[in-house]
Image (cartoon, rainbow, N blue to C red; front, side):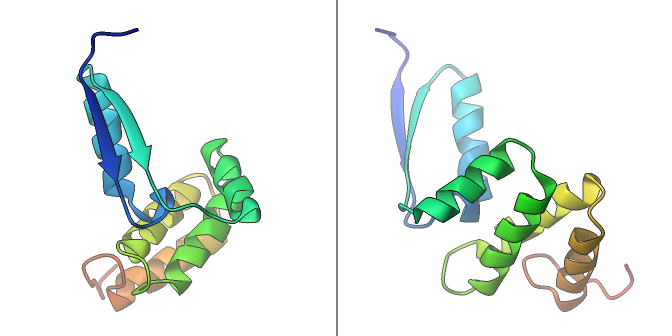
Amino acid sequence: MSDAPRICLVTSTHIAANPRLVKEADALTNAGYRVRVAAMNVLPEQAALVEKVNAGDVDAKVQLAEILEDHDGVFANAAEGAVELYTAAAADGSKRARLKLALMVQSGCGVARDQTR
């Protein structure tokens, strides 16, 4: 058993819709804390999609981003999570993700609006 201090982070949304929480958990882990995250449960097919995202599947990143984008206003930070996933998929070469990200930037959904990009 570790003597490291323990902390539990709680979110009322799915962890994929809360990228800030993931960054906080990583930072706390790197600082020596034992971190547990309590998040909303998801359907089995959504859980499988998240597993594919975590494995680096580009198409899964786009699919999950689209789900989050469709739920903007329902889940806190859903649009921001979609932007993060679209950005990662675009960096991996997804043309669809680049298009969706451009539309979100143009409209200001999940990011500051920027008509010049």
